[in-house]
Length: 147
Length: 147
Length: 147
Length: 147
Image (tube, rainbow over all chains, first blue to last red):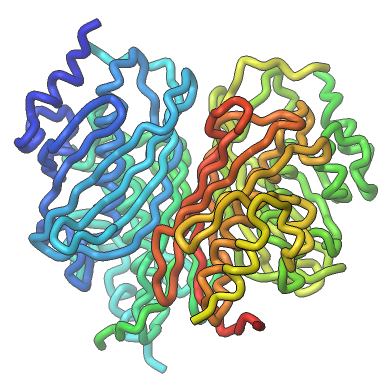
């Protein structure tokens, strides 16, 4: 079966994912680095409006990048139903400054009929340090994903 | 001892917290509802740029609102040192649509010398439903907070 | 509809829950303090075999008490299907020593068709301090609970 | 510098860790499979008293095995001070039955002066399936570890 959603994201490799149907994803403005069903990688540039009072990437924005990339990884699985996120657990390690580039890499851990679990890591490409890691569970709903 | 940071936030009760030193907090644009050392309440209006592909408040933005309000609650404790967030764990329950108002309420659970823990809930003020709840731990650093 | 499982647990109020069908629950040996569909309370005595190298209640046993009480709270909801636990997130605050009594109190936060969420707290009844708090999500399975 | 605690655990490779100073670890009765500063592996046999009402490894015991192995991995770092666990977040995937063997493998993610973070996975050696994964943060205390 053709997986149009996977093909869509793949068509943006090396470019900002301007084809995202998510207004907030456009605000995050990630560039697609790699994408397959087991993992997606996006890079984000830390803009001033993403920072906290001490000029570092805001933990909420870090969490948002993770949550959004997990959402992309879910979408490209090609499933019929939405699986809303039921929890997101993030550990924070190192910071990122304005204009730094951070890479988010997701990893599909479990693809069950009812529950899907992802890990994710965020890496500061300038310092090469681990910014954060996360785990998230998604659970099936009755809502169909439109074509 | 005078707590200038508490007084600053209190001076914005009923108004958007435009005095926030956090660029991302300004993007979230929360209105201060109540504030004391054990709890702060902020209301946020869901703007289109905060939504996901199905037009609902993006889970990353929900997490951001929580993380930012916990940051405010920490700041008004009047401590000398920064306590960076080391983890944030969020459970998601119900959605919020564009133009809905959501209330974030934090709760100080533990104020230790080394570790500070907060709970938070997010309530959709239109549907009266629980949108999310969270727990977060902050740990002392050697960085002093400037006056 | 009669809720036999609720009645069973209620019949043990003030006594060790020796009627538990769970071998590990018998090892934990909790006393039923109160029980209704929104919350159960169990007390446990910290035995030496529950302690860590510094003579305190082992964090794993604390987590076990929480997980087990959440399991009881789930069971007394009277549902037809099992809802396996998909995640458990625990924050630890204060310790408990051998022979201390700890109280676990669960709280039903969301009772959805697919997902059930509980909070829990653990209180050291000797020191009156908060030992731990937790959140846990359970997700429906196709396995029926036998009568 | 000699690391006596590491040497102690290494001396039990292939055997139950009967030299553990932790009464609850003795109850869990794990066999040391491998041990270095970045990771320890222990195997546990699922005994009947470790099971839940449907005869499967109790989620609390799974959490306990994880927490205990993380404790061992911490101890062999050879640090002077205790770092109490401040949170443990576990995702559950597949079950294990009585008499199954499960392997717990920890992974040191961050070794900071103030915060130490570990990941862990639990694998059912009979089914080769992932039983659980976890993340845990430990934070420095002023308590010295006796020699």
